[in-house]
Amino acid sequence: ELLGDTLAKIAYEKAGIIKQRVPVVIGRHHPETAPVFEKVANEKNAPLQFASKNYKIQLVDKRNEGLIVSVTKNDTQWPEVLTFNLGGLYQLENIPTVLNTIDVLVEKGLAIHEHQVYKGLKHIQQFTGLRGRWEVLAQRPMVICDVCHNEAGVQHAIQQLKTLDYDHLHIVWGMMKDKETKAVLKLLPRKAHYYFCEADVPRAMPTKKLAKEATDVGLQGKVVGNVKEALQQARNNAGERDVIFVGGSIFVVAEVL
Image (cartoon, rainbow, N blue to C red; front, side):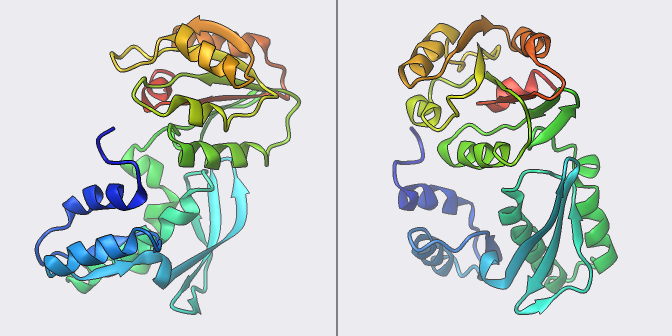
């Protein structure tokens, strides 16, 4: 609604953060957005780097508590694997941005040592308090929450759900009324039982309207309303080998944390 309806328009708005003569790191080099960032950075004499050109990340192992990856910087592989204690596979695209940003800070004179980088990323959730990014809240049944709320984020979450081994999938879902609801709902798996809910914020989409739009795209479930009650009902109905996923909005996830 505010940023635009194309990647280039959104990139231009995002580029507003670029400051005069201040280095900027962009995570992914994308043919549609790169020229926008390059133009704005050039106008502001801001040195620009694309992290995806400098770093390559390879998944070594995936665990509930995080990811283990190998790091290659400019064709040179790091001797030790890196542990990143946020479990979303989409973090594989975020790690290069973090590492490239650290490089820039070191170039600017900050004393950041290699062992501090390893320690910081291994304990990033504890050090920053970052919550709700593919966070496993419980086992048997497994309860996972993720703040995914747009098409790209939901696509990532659904792909990762497909990697899990479970008997049945339960999804606690609520959205904001200013999002592209139909486009997101079409991405969700039909073979799941839904508990439609509404976060306690003015922007929340009314539960009955959300359930109606979900039904229109083939999703089946029940209207619950309250987020915590929706999660409790999912727990009551889930077996030990089931998975409960909570998502659709930052505000929905916030109410279960």
